[in-house]
Length: 261
Ligand code: CO8
Image (tube, rainbow, N blue to C red):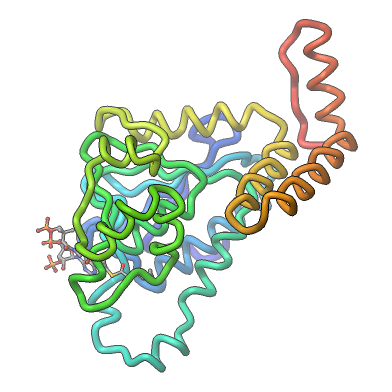
């Protein structure tokens, strides 16, 4: 990866074909400063290109996944500073990750932290996780997708309430609202996320990639376009050896071995 990152730790092969990126600014509750986000972008790009990785878990620590953008770094910025810093190009790059990314959350998941979790494909939360978009309390509003992804995930009523009041919701409420995939005791959340990643990593990485892309398309386009897109990806998979292996293994009543070809 070139230079050693300062604010993240990359753990390879935490399960077969699974990598884990840990956000590591614990004293600041993993506040997402510009350098951390650049390091995260670079790490995801490298892991996305690495054939020994098929799924990625992002976590913080027990106390905080991330308490948002770094308020101290933003406090004295002007609108034009913000425009020129263009931090969202980093977010756009992260969004391009083609392998599945699972957020393993515990503690505070706030502001940009909540937006980062929602940018991931799935969220596994500890019982102590609290999700919120508290930007309104700072005189600003979500800027990294919060008004869009939260609304699509939980609907208008709860999204509007969270964005306009800054109220945090519990993991239980987030599960009920459809924001997250599962809630587990705090000792288990990271392992549970790794297990989910490992389950996906057993599948054909090509099929996983194209399936992820098709699901995400549902948020971006009409049903007609989305169905068309799905069909093209579906046909394309019949060009893979993994499709032949998957179906042959079924017929021979044995587990498939997918090679990503
Ligand atoms: N930025 C900078 N520092 C932070 C942040 C933050 N977001 N959150 C916590 N910290 C720091 C605190 O300043 C404190 O530092 P110090 O010890 O030097 O005073 C340390 O972390 C520990 O925090 P607290 O003492 O406050 O811990 P508590 O347990 O008392 O409170 C809270 C925890 C409730 C999470 C509290 O820290 C808090 O309210 N944090 C701010 C949450 C927030 O408002 N987040 C939204 C930020 S704005 C945003 O995310 C905009 C996103 C759009 C762009 C995305 C780009 C990345």
